Image (tube, rainbow, N blue to C red; front, side, top):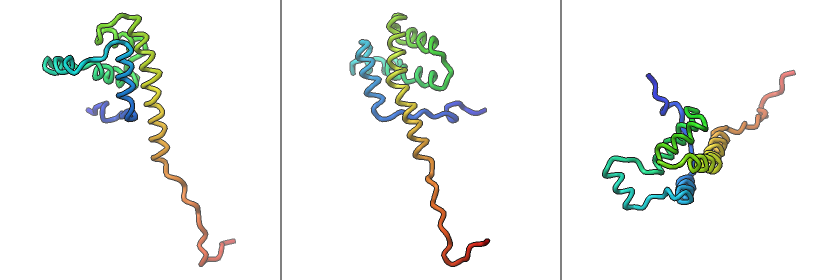
Length: 126
């Protein structure tokens, strides 16, 4: 059996974490180092990890937008309104970066056509 993680790779630019962290801060979901340490000791995921996993599922089309919002609401323990606003911000600011990154990656992998040169030592066939 094949694993979906192997089939699909989503590439985000380096600044994605900073943008997601700023969004968490705007929604008062940012965690202090002490809170992160406590969650780590309890074996719980941080809010940024929760968001990253939900974004991955949404991007792979395993979640609809309402499911995306509901997952944020449930896993971050926030109101529906706050989850909807958070989902919209994440979609507009983080997922748009992923799309741009995919386009850049596709452009980088395309090889430019090499100009066809004539062999100067042969006569053209007519």
